[in-house]
Image 1 (cartoon, rainbow, N blue to C red):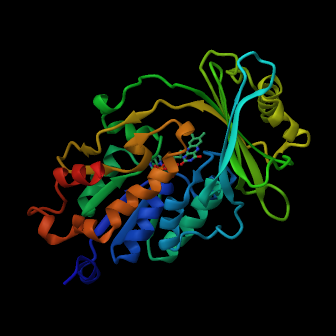
Image 2 (image 1 turned 180 degrees about the vertical axis):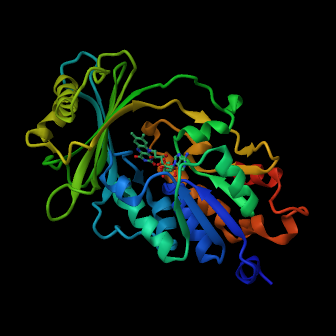
Image 3 (image 1 turned 120 degrees about the vertical axis):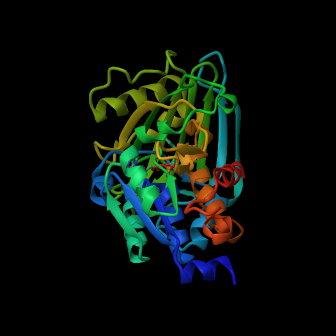
Length: 363
Ligand SMILES: Cc1cc2nc3c(=O)[nH]c(=O)nc-3n(C[C@H](O)[C@H](O)[C@H](O)COP(=O)(O)OP(=O)(O)OC[C@H]3O[C@@H](n4cnc5c(N)ncnc54)[C@H](O)[C@@H]3O)c2cc1C
């Protein structure tokens, strides 16, 4: 008898904390395999939809294929395609000329669906597949209760405070401070550039980076909800790090455009008619790239396993977080791994072993 059919006869109970890319994808994948899944998250779908932008979430083909395989690609036909990557490095003399410039097609397109569109949609999908969705802010007491009532508890709390319960893996976390000041703006009205849509990546030595690509958002242009996402990565304290005193979304956009005017004339040319899609569609902050140890032992001795950003948070410049958060659930839910909840690995208690969790995470 296969693990999957076992799961259907006696559904194992799995709890996931966090309704992001990692938690919702895994939740739906496990429901499809016959597990009973509880997903606890601290924001309602409406709060996510009407809240501030959270990411630029560009996802490449391997990860998109996982979404397709799981039937989680609801926005694929509407979302603009990112067909290539472009890299431009201006000359160091500040004359606004290109020292290096190339564009190349990807083998298959990438896409970025605003998480404020995707997560509410996936929350509804999770419930329609039979999942138990609960809105609650999870702390240690709730983790204890979940580990008591479920066979496995996964913590996919992203950058939420709770993930700091997972200890930092010093050996795998070489930096202790943010390497960049980040800023995002979702805009409409940007001129298209080149024969195909790219992530246009501009690297300004000693100053920072700017990349821009099309996406699907909650607002955007009336017919399509298409927008462009402008992402700035400033070296902290450097000449591009200009958002500290910004008080409004419009001021934020002015700062962004001022940087393009100062360093990247070919990008400001595209921006004559840009406007923010919404006052909520700007973000600034800093991320310290961190790897955490993947398991947390609660005061009761029961163990929780981390997932997605909870275990490894990259600087967004890598464009990896959402892609990793898609692949990690796939590793856990794939058939060879589904023994996580099979009786043969339960060691006489209701949980898989810590060693098993660590081995799964290290894949
Ligand atoms: C500016 C920026 C740009 C980015 N651009 C890209 C990109 O282009 N490509 C890419 O691949 N990645 C990108 N990323 C990274 C990507 O957004 C994250 O890696 C990804 O969202 C992580 O998914 P996750 O499911 O682990 O966490 P999240 O998506 O953050 O989900 C965490 C969930 O946990 C919930 N939660 C938190 N605390 C609690 C609690 N105590 N109780 C209950 N629920 C809780 C939250 O509400 C949320 O639902 C970017 C990130 C940033 C900041």
